[in-house]
Length: 128
View 1 (cartoon, helix red, strand yellow):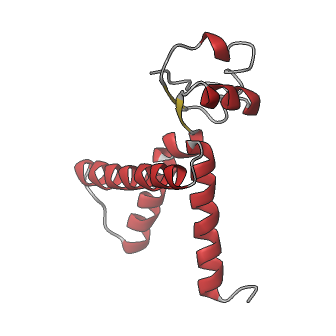
View 2 (cartoon, rainbow, N blue to C red):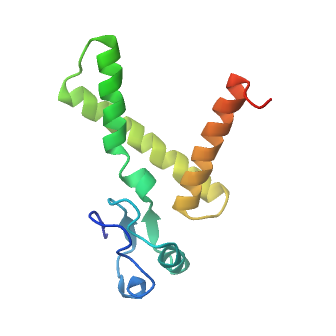
């Protein structure tokens, strides 16, 4: 497993062929260029995209906002439990979508996101 977690554009077409890992979990924002991503996917490397793999911080920030709005606070164990549940659910949703459409996880994540925005837009009656 490879976890590029510092800088963007670190996995490129120049070095993608040298990667031996079967799984890449993108901890950084945009660590893989689009062409390198395509190359990795064609080689069968399972890439967990940045928008999924590093969503824990944003999710935890949301939990903090919810707690502040309600005036009560969870213990660290409760935050971790809720975070794990959300991340596992998100991974399953993206994996299921990528499998359904026979595509990579990044595209699966985009499909999940677009569907969620479309659903909320329809529910709110916007652009109807």
